[in-house]
Length: 407
Image 1 (cartoon, rainbow, N blue to C red):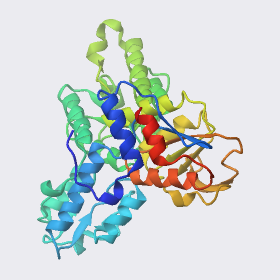
Image 2: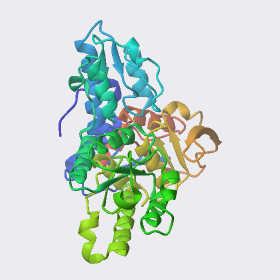
Image 3: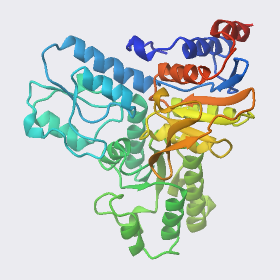
């Protein structure tokens, strides 16, 4: 895989060493068991796969190269480059201005931007409407488009489904930048509907089967379906794609439910006509991150710490999986570990940051699961590990731990 030129302060000494050793031992990534780092009074279980993915590193490289090659020019980002506050803040300090927030509200109005300015498209991609707007303004977009290739793969899949007259069911969060972009690209060629989860899909299935009246569709899925959508006609043939950061297991569950629904309505013999049996469009990094998280669940740890941006979808799903077994603390950097007693962390259910006491148990060794999302620099994970170690005496040196791991 391509090596990207990203700032050194995002790279780590600890995690990068572990990743490289695991890569040498298991180049095909068949083993998703975590790496155990035994420091004596504290043990860390490091996920087999996490951190910056191809799309994120590609976007960061393009952004920094754009800054380097265009001194004196005004450079804008449509919205957050990725869902990590530290990385976005770094870009802003370098002089990049954000045009919109993640909801599409403007910080900078279009009329304030000229054809001499540079506008970067973030890794999530953007809508066709915004692409056209930029082109009409005379702003070149191709050179400064950092859209992840795995997101573009989803758009291509949606287009193919439309060519075969399938309605595209998009598994995603309708207000997420990536899903808004995917919906925009999908409706070029296909009728489209966004479903948030299996619960919404169950409702859609009941509408398809006539259990719920068709009028319910327009109320329940308001703002989530394409123009001139005809419930009777446009739900006869369906295929599923997804926001690339959703839970793979839920996307599969959604596809299975819709396939059963079509069998119930049209019969097994006609299923190929009414359901496009697409393979999951989840990106490799999200898939690997989730597989590695299941590997973490096999450990007998005392707690889990997940590092990443609070508005990061893929990171939230990792938290969702881990909290089923462990007390799980979702933090965006090491500064959230206030002391050996207190930690400030994000609750994915209430959507607020809270402070918890006595998060580290008194037993020794303390066993801690440690991982991050796809938009989190490995250096941030290093800082969390070192912050935890600072609370303990007589810990083994990093060199000794790495050496024993290498044996």
